[in-house]
Image (cartoon, rainbow, N blue to C red; front, top):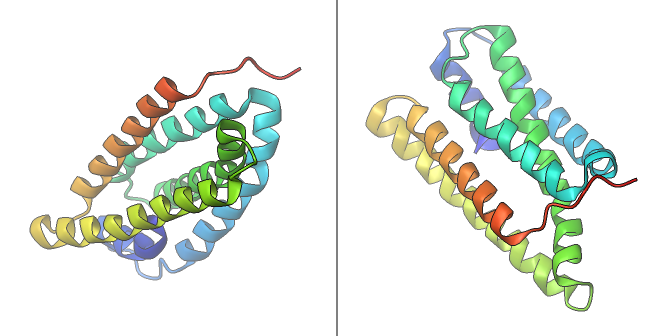
Length: 165
């Protein structure tokens, strides 16, 4: 949702001009999240890392509509990009750990399609929220609720392993 709408969301929260730098920062944070999530798994374990990323993202989404300064919007976009990249970077390993490597291609394909469909539907949710309410608050809270659902699903379906030695 942020990837395609970060500038519009930022402009709806503030009257600051020239917020286009946020797109680049989002991409850099996404890359850093993908790169460092493997390091976090080594320190915390895969389940704890994903749960931490989801919980941080929930807090960021809840408070995002209150970000009104350059610094807070920039920080919110960096957190969103980092958490998205970190969680998405871990998905192949989680799929392999959960289902094995025998049918990894099909399992990863289904996971990727689910992420693509969710991304497509999130853009509709963003547009509807903007048209009906004039801002993105509803979308931010709906996405926080979906992330909370992911936390619950994850806790019910994945064992939380102890921290690796």
